[in-house]
Image 1 (spheres, helix red, strand yellow):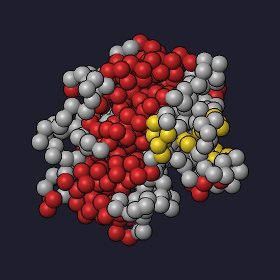
Image 2 (tube, rainbow, N blue to C red; image 1 turned 120 degrees about the vertical axis):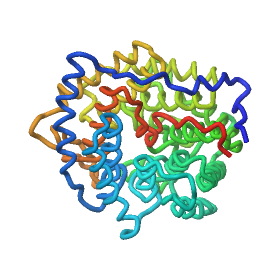
Image 3 (spheres, rainbow, N blue to C red; image 1 turned 135 degrees about the vertical axis):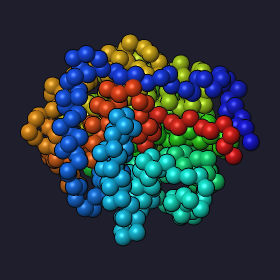
Length: 439
């Protein structure tokens, strides 16, 4: 069955496609990036993450398998291919030997997502090693009422990302439809549209005193922005029930825009009466204007909504020009560090061709290698500033994809290679173009 055009305002499907990817960095910058990337990759080939997340996508072997697969595809390198397969085997052993939750970033769906990325298994159910995962996740998603988180990192949105990656398989479509159904049940309807609440027990412990009844997170990683982007992917993939949710969620979300006098365009969290509770202190993917704006632009293009795309693109341009305080970004990772901003703006540059995004990406690349790279320290020269469970912060040698060295390597590879990355779909920085013949 052919997919219906998602919205009356839609343009044709060419709007969804990214022009041919090209290296962001040229000349001296390209050479500098490769000089950092080479030793970093070598260090990551020999590091061994420690439990309890040794196998996970965000922090462990599955994430590093994604990196070495990307390296193998970019350079047609058999050594990188062998490393990717060995890391993936190490990660998949956890599926049978450990009790893992369904979280995308630290659970079994993340490891399965990495298998899909690295091995690209057959769509035949009998030959597909992930069919049982699809079935198990589909059963889990029938839980009603939904008692768990809704977000990208550890909830429904992340499960939706896995399902999108697995389309057009019937089991994946079943999972995606269930994700949309559960999000529909969780949505709160207001005069301004639809919103998704972070329950009190899911609020970070350090914030619970200020949010005893919960609140509304606007970020990509843990909040409403991530919901909207995965709903955009569902609409683009023909899940009709996602359309109303996306419209209502967009309307509510855009009503949260702050005035020009605020420190940011969007707060990170709002209260039950929509009062802003916290504002971002730095530009980042996880929270704040850059990640939010990219997510809105990504979903608008996916569903072919010209008016939404124009609004989101204006927000992206504003974020690139507004957030230029390099000192506010304290480390190099993808989640909330310089590499995340390099790749975020590189993705926008590749999509739009606009110089403002090229300039922003190159600015953050310079910050990455001049401020955050310290040869001889950490993993390949990079350390990560992490917040611990007790609320304190400290520097760690983090090899992970989300906040550590693996993610930095992926961003540098994307900035120096003519091969379009697919790994950033796990962060909703891009969406897989749907198969027009999908069921």
